[in-house]
Amino acid sequence: MAACGDNTSSSIAPESLKSEERDSGFHHRGYLGWITDFATRPDMHAAWPSMRLDDALLEDYRRKFRLMWKLGYNEMSVWGLYVSRSWPLDVTSAVLPERGALVEQLIDEAHEQGIRVYSGLGVYSWGFEDIIRAHPSLSHDDNPRTMCANDPEAWDWMRRVIDFVFDRFEIDGVSMQSADQGRCTCRQCRGYSDAEYHALLDVRVSEYIREQDETKTIAVNTWGLKLQDPENLPALLEIGKAADYIIDTHDTTRRRDPGHRRRIIESLDCSFGTIGGAQVEPPQHWKRDRWFLPTCRRQGEHLAELYAEGGRACEYFFHILDNPGDEISFGVTGKLLSEPETPWRDHLQSVLAELYETSSASARDELTELVVRAEHAYFRFLPDSLAGTISMEPLVSDEPGPPVYLTKRLSQQQRAEYSETVESLADEFENLEPEVGAKEKLTRTVTCLRNTARDAGAAS
Image (tube, rainbow, N blue to C red; front, side, top):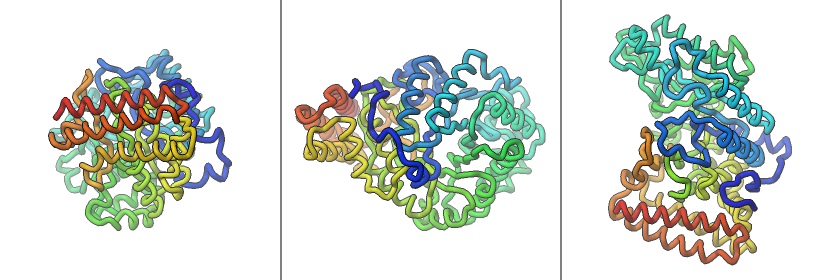
């Protein structure tokens, strides 16, 4: 086993899977995030979202692609291949030749490992701020981040971006978002419900992409759009006719009626899914040993229920393999997406035995219980229905921020209890040292736990 941080030889799954196993489980076993989100080296003083792409990050991608294939992930959606927040007015100058060469290497490396690469794509919003600033007529209300759905010039700009996205790189598809920055509410647009408005945009863009190349995969991620109302179903059905899959990021379909999600899945012409339940949002600025928050049980129960209802898609958020808790969650989720009917605890035991090189079944079982308890120590204070990402630090920043996953979600008393529990767990992990072959990984895990306890104690 290599030292922690060297993901090349992280053997948390067999070297290969049979072809029939590749086709079982979730059809879209995706991985989603900003381009630097799982970097071994943090971008401690870069504004979010960082666009860094260099040889070190490319090596992180090579390692991740090999591991994704071993685990059964088959797709990756990357935001930041082209731009961070804003397209330039000429669009094409977004990608300089040096960066383009690195992106091309990234895509080639993914394809060599059988991973399809999709680009994140803002639809009428996210990325159009400079264009709107130069052409104010594109925005028909007081939201300077979104173009009007009924403006012909806005559609011209959207098509220009789509054409460049597919012409510049050999990507396999797009993961689209239209709702996270809001919507136009001008006189023409306000007659649409939110679901109708975003369906109009997503279907329009999907159909245009299909006209150019019907082999491309189209995903619609509904971040910012709530889907719990039954009257939203007709709009979703329209998206389902145009897209390959829909991702309900925050699992909103079950907020009002737990049975609503199943009815949606049964009605759609495309696959449906989520990001896999509650999970850690990768902190861009933090050192990688500052937290230990596995989410295996949460994801295991969420994905098993989603699969039983007919859900066949997931866009799991990027995780940082240099953080042991993230590494465990990533491994378990990959196995769950390929074998969702196997109990999550079995997958967890398998991952831990391989990562930590346990010397006996009893040591593996004890390690499993410690990881489950570490997860429960935090999540016992949060609602069982929580879905979506948990921000560790403030997202939009240019420097390491405070631990908002503690200060914003837990009370002072809860933080004190969490700190005490995690410190005790660190001692118990440390006691397993004689039973573990991967000594450095265990040491790093203990460091992460003690740093977590320190953060929680300081915030109390």
